[in-house]
Image (cartoon, rainbow, N blue to C red):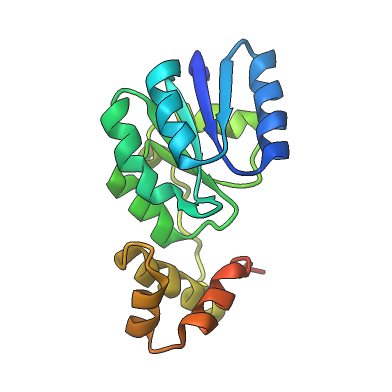
Length: 179
């Protein structure tokens, strides 16, 4: 498995970017990091990356919404959406928007190399034999509705029939872990 020659990291976590850039640099990959959408879009044109590691939550920006603009500026670049808030709904949405693959955080450098090497459809793991818990299914439903509302929390809250602040508090929490 090989990594792209030039990788653009788009993540608001400075420590994560530094560590990942150092690991990629040791493998001979030329790396640049950006921490917001505006500077990332400018860097795509200047740096011309072969691969892009994009975070789902970029402070005030949404990585899912950024995929379209990245594809327009650099259609041949492989975009891997990496997130600590992994869900089936966001994975499907990312792929529909043009991401090459989807990678839940934390990940190692081998998993990143593999995510650039083969399409997600071929690399997708088998679904679990047992059904997800009710709490996990609820979390996935909230993520799906939010994606259908284009990331608009107020619209998603109306669809779900909850107060906007309640939905914001729920979205700030980590996804439910399966046991």
